[in-house]
Amino acid sequence: TELQETDMNVRPMLKATSIKFVSIFRNQFSKEQFGGLLPLLIAHLGSPHVVVHTYAASAIEKMLTSKVDGPNNTKVAKVGGADLKPFLGNLFTALFAIVDNLDLNENEYVMKCIMRSLNVAKDDLLDVVSIVLEKLTSALGVVAKNPKNPQYNHFLFESIAVLIRAVCSKDSAHTSAFEHFLFPPFQTILQMDVVEFTPYVFQLLAQILEFRPEGAGLGDGYTSLFPPLLTPTLWERKSNVPALSRLIVAYLGKGAKDLVPHLMGMLGVFQKLVSSKANELFAFDLLRAIVMYMPQEAFMPRMKDIFQILLMKLQHGKTPKFVGLVTHFFALFVGKFGSQGYLDQLNQIQPGLGLLLLGQVWIPRLQSSSPTRLEAKTQVVGLTKLLCDTPALLADTNGHQIWSQILACAVKIVISPDSHLTGVSAEDNDNDAEIGYDASFSLLHFAKRPAVDPFPEVQDAGASLAKSMQTICASHPGVFAPLIQQGLSVDPKLSAGFETLCQKSGVYLA
Image 1 (cartoon, rainbow, N blue to C red):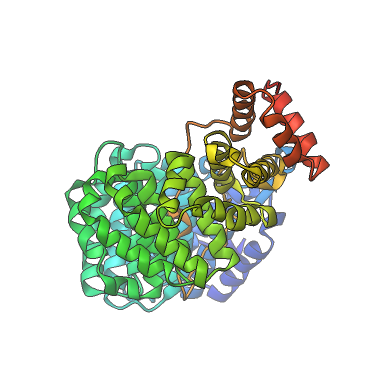
Image 2: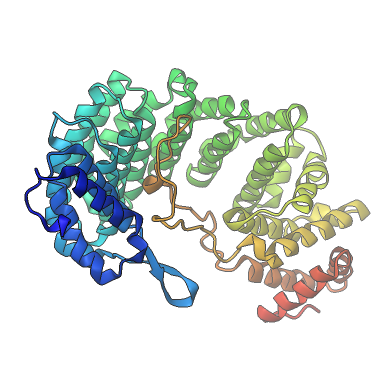
């Protein structure tokens, strides 16, 4: 009854207490009751009392994350996009009226409610995208002059990220509208060097770039922005590194050919990042992107130098994390350019180095810890090429032993349920994710880089391994059967798993 009172000036504390009650016991209300409560809470966003409209925004946000039991032991949102659609106009009008009121302090609960509402309504945003983006851009212009509330700012950038994802994932042509709206305030932030905001700007620039239509290239705005991104001082700031490296990877994904003149600058960044334990992860993100997207003739002459940098770090700063990163890169390189390409690069540094690293670094890493998801697939693709295309492994008993161990590692990855080999990307539930400001680096949940499969042509890495084994066994009768037995005999699970894999793949090994 209290919430049905239309005069917002009477009994504000009682109204606030009533809203808090709704918020605390939200899981007890049915979907139908939510439908009755939503318009009442939206009305209270218009209260002149900060405590009332703050509680109302918080209650709506929490209601939008409420779950009910769904099919197959899943949880589904109690309020979906279709349920929210009738209220969208009034909801956004009321929320942005608070944001636009410069007499009020920046209210993180209101901005979080905007973020959540945009995410729930993602399928119905095309009609309101221009006005919502205009409002968010206006709010960004205000806070950029004097960033005060980090949580508010974080939810503001998350709201922009939600909008980009919801609209551009349906039609990539909308990226031009986002560039038109957002480039001016982003350029202002970068020119003014608003340190709190630059990591956010880099993430959103990467997100828009990733959604640009295929074949559209980088465009003038992105092309002119690229050279300053390699400025060493930008990379000195810890909070910039994850977002900047993500942005460079996005550039490579969309316009690697245009970036060939900047290869040395990017390799300089790689060398700087890989020398730091804190940043080596981002160094390998960059290196893998160079190998995946750049023309081979551009970077291949530099590969000897790159391998030497990696070997130096292996020699003097070897940690399990670095070994994992470097062996992931080895697998990608072999998968893309063949085992002979890998051996040639390393053997020109030192004869026999390729096999030495296989036996002393790569295989032990896979024996001690199994990769997962996309790295698991990359490893299986790379290991399969090593098994099938490396005559050097057949030259002596040491090579035979390494071949058997490679097979054991590949089969171990394929049969392990922890590898998640078939589900190559992990999808987060947007409603369950912890979203908020982090002082070290604030990752924008809604602007996360989608997982990119470097080997989309390999539909099933396990089946590909089995079929490749069938091919080489048929072409070398009597040679590989004992090596296969030797490799899989170390663990009964491996031989049983490999047998099952062959049966599933319709493969018979002679």
